[in-house]
Amino acid sequence: MNEKATPPSRLSLGLAIAAAAVSIVLLLLVIGLHSQVRDLRAMVLNDRANLALNTGAGAEAEAMLAEVAALAPDTPALWNRRALARMVAGQPSEAAEAARQFLQLNPADPSMSALLSAAQIRASEFDDAEQTLTSALQLNPLQRDLMQNLSELRRLQGRPAEAAMIIDQYLAANPTDGFFQYKRAMADVAGNLNDDRRKEITKAIKSGDATAGIYVVGAAIDFRDDNPAAARAKLGEASRRASTQDMRTMLEDVFFASYLQFAPAGAPAASPSPSPADGVRTDD
Image 1 (tube, rainbow, N blue to C red):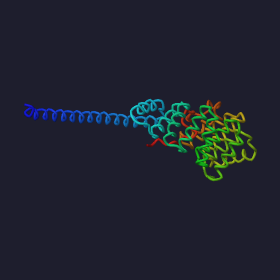
Image 2 (image 1 turned 60 degrees about the horizontal axis):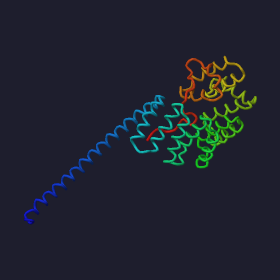
Image 3 (image 1 turned 45 degrees about the vertical axis):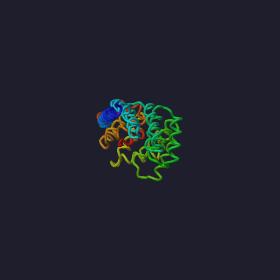
Image 4 (image 1 turned 30 degrees about the vertical axis):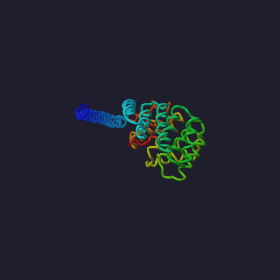
């Protein structure tokens, strides 16, 4: 009897093993399909977030990227986008946290260190910004965005002479950088503007060949001299010579905080874009 019962027992065991194998395969297929759907959803959200960032919709981009973070593993590219989105949305403290998350995954990145310091400056966390910039510049001496942020930090600390020295240090190695030439002139305006510098700027404007940045500096001098009509005229000329983004960046200068109501029609008002250090990449 036992010998006759053996074949059915073996058959039952084989069927059970086959059924288990089929179940495992089906489970793996379901898991794989769910993973593909999740990855596709994350990819679509990433694309939409990039479009939102390109149109300045930082809060909208951050909402989508938060969902991506729940769907996909942490990556430097994700935290890069989230840091930038939060800066565009006017959330500097949150942007700083995202930048720190990026740097944990990808240490010593000068571009993200620049964004982190910019966020800290905007959040008035000056001691933290000082530490970030000091550490980053040890690894990347004379890196453009880091030097820009350090000069801005010195100016916000009420130390325009030191800001000018930092800008001069950068210009010594990069003498044709027009933006730093503008920053150098603004450091003079914020500090002790001597007669030679004033004459130099006036001469450049009268020649008709001055850059938009020089016209903006001239407007700052006019505002300082309580001559808003002349300042408005110079800002109007600057807006005709510069891109909208360049004008926005220059008018975000802290010097203009109390003067923006004088900006001419067509000149963009300040916005919470990620300047300083607004060149952080958003690619994967």
